[in-house]
Length: 313
Image (cartoon, rainbow, N blue to C red; front, top):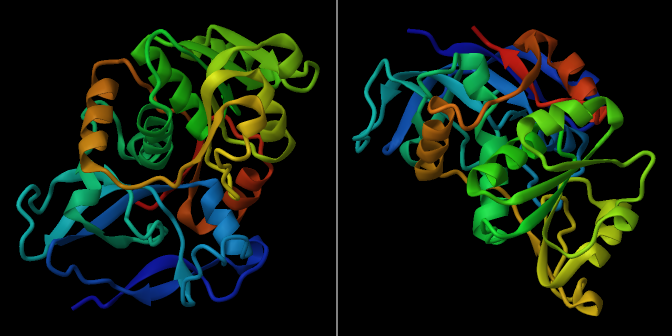
């Protein structure tokens, strides 16, 4: 009976050299859970922030940690109480714990995953969950975006940003994105109505009266964003420390933060958009799981178009 698998783990916080491709115990599915044979996962900014120790105040896991939020794979076995999936089903999703997917096998709850989009391979499918769920929840749940509104998306060429542009357009909203000039055509092709080169143009000098800002950058970019939002509008940020209503009080706008949550229901809706051609995942680079250090360094550089995928099988 097999009891071990290959996984990428860290035994201490640090630079990418703390990532070790090694043998690890094979997990077991409990009630309501499934063991997944992982075919692909991805690198998200959260992964290297956890690895570096930046997230310890919010999520300090016991060592060793198997990183990784996204997965696409095949159901290997099911625990008691699982009703929606069977052995052999192709699924995609993210775990509640937001770790554990850099491995040949992973355990997830039935409520955290959905059937893989039929039109995608495993690499493409793995690139979707965290980015699309973050964009969906930021725009529609927290930001309450409507068709008549305008949204400004900072970092529109990245994993979450590229999904957000497309999802906002499915709503019928006007979309403005910030990106480097080399990514202007890319973001425009996603559906953005206007793209601003953040390196040469101060966006606050070019636009005003937007209803919603999706901040995927933080820092100075967030602080400069308050002034472009119309009275009563909202800034939603994925970057801790999260903003509050008090932060935007001088401008008469709302400030909200978001930490993405698993949702099988939303994943099913996203899969429908993908399979009907209304949403397209964007994979910038594919590397084998064993080369995860290179993938982390690339993600940490901040110049990725779409997602970095890790092929497990």
